Image 1 (cartoon, helix red, strand yellow):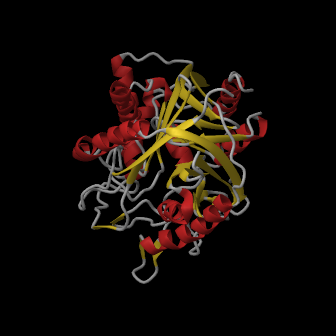
Image 2 (tube, helix red, strand yellow; image 1 turned 45 degrees about the vertical axis):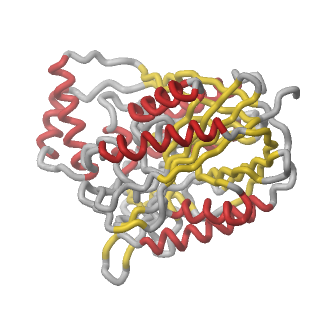
Length: 441
């Protein structure tokens, strides 16, 4: 290998003001304090003429429109190609709202303009400026901080809870980079699990993953950030039997101590895995962008949409409010003359570094999808990223759609035309084809 892999990294604080609305439960969960600062961490990679940028933002989700805007503005300032940039959200529910969500609240535009956008652009520029030659080390271990959260009830319905036999991926991957002087410059931790351990709390926080990455940094891992994998049906494995924090004393959802407790378990796992990294190697860099085609169903009929809208039109909060907006939008689409399509094209970027590939998905993928991609990919470490370069809600597997539940409801009501029931098979097939198109395969 004639060219050396180079890495630059920069971390910026993106903590919102106290009093902002927190994301994920209702439009009135107002922050009252800061438990731990939110961050935007940019990793710049180059090898020869190839450049890539991956940014971890400790936010719940970033809209596709905002992610595209950030990528365009970063390209203008740094000359890193738009097509070689991944903007990722770790999915903490204890951060500000950064996209309009019917039933959950409106985007905090002041925060986006005054805090998020400037910080992300600055982190990207600084990361490119401090790039230096590195070697990469990878270590994989098991962590039980996550669990399938689609709990099956006696009547065969599904609620958010804990399902010990449901699919989830226990693998935690720690990637670290060592400079030519032997110093660890930065690390990355990949795992798939919702950031809901704190529950409906009122503290601003990165949730459980924040405590984990801090521990890796404190144990010599340099700047460290979290990258969330397929977490659509995976929640934190809490002692209360739920996947959200609960204050037993007050009988209310929300307990930051649950995030701290689970974060310490995750920290022990991540530090152990990091310290098991003994071999560091030179690595090449390849970036590929495509649009994967996913089949979609026809819209509900106008008559059905009107009937359903009448059932939910008084609701404004959470999934019921989202359902009212969904059927209202369908009714409007008929008025506007919308014509049904056969499939939807979704952007996908792969950043391949040596034997590792980060694969972007603008969804909250169900765990089984990531597991099946890993199984059939010939790249040894194929790491799927949820909520990367946008968000299009949950992406459920065909075998779970018949069971219903919160995630399935969201999967079906996100778009005018929902993804087809066998959409997961198409996502897997298209992604594997994309992976195999890389020169390294």
